[in-house]
Length: 330
Image (tube, rainbow, N blue to C red; front, side, top):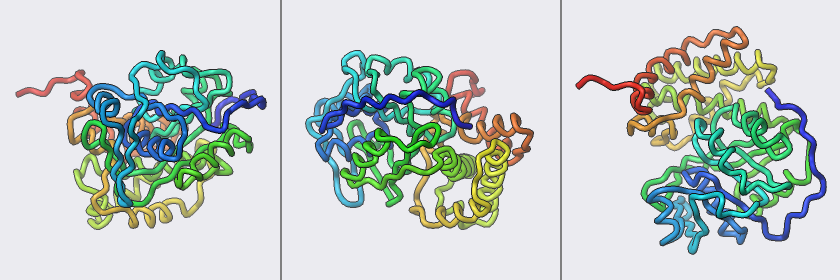
């Protein structure tokens, strides 16, 4: 699943203070961006609507179990043309918005700029590399249960907050190490995996069943993992993702499913995914890039995915309705 090998630039000129753009200041982007801003990095938040206005007027507030993180004043805009090239862009938009965002962010991309996608799924790095050039892209993922609760305010629950990234060909690099140090300084759990594509699929194997089963059951994870029937659905979804990964030449551990279920058992019992929340609120969701992607990628490698297909097909009418492509009769 790796992209073509990029030509790396070694003549880095990043200053002592790193210029960071958070493109998409939702739960994940806002959470990690606030941590970087708190430690003195030069962070610009790209947001829109009332969320943007609130950040510009009052700053960005992130509620955590350890207390509030307040970035005030906060640099924020909805127009990348107003931001000169930065050192790194963390992309926090929804999966279906990645292509448009890659095109729109180009005024912020200089010769040395890195772009790190934080979306759930396994396809964003390749899409970004195709548009911006592989030399500008790291593969990345994050873990956080955070969401926008009001304009300018993000809530974080639980303690499973982390970020991981790496070069597309898994080589060790100065620029990836520099970013690792940046998050370490900010007190964020950070790692450069030896195989970033394996890490992406491991995260994919967690969130896709969590989100998909949550969407059809309308239950938080504490209920899903307790009721035997929904717990079985979670495991079956994971087994399908594991089979597709292996057929795609991604070597997941033989114990990846039970290991992931053990992690599921540690999550806050009221936790839900962004996909589940979007569907419940009648908004467009990432279903096509979660369970839908399992089905699509499974077909490409001749692996059946009946449980993920059931979830995807069950949610599809609501998704089409949210996107204005289908009208339900009154």
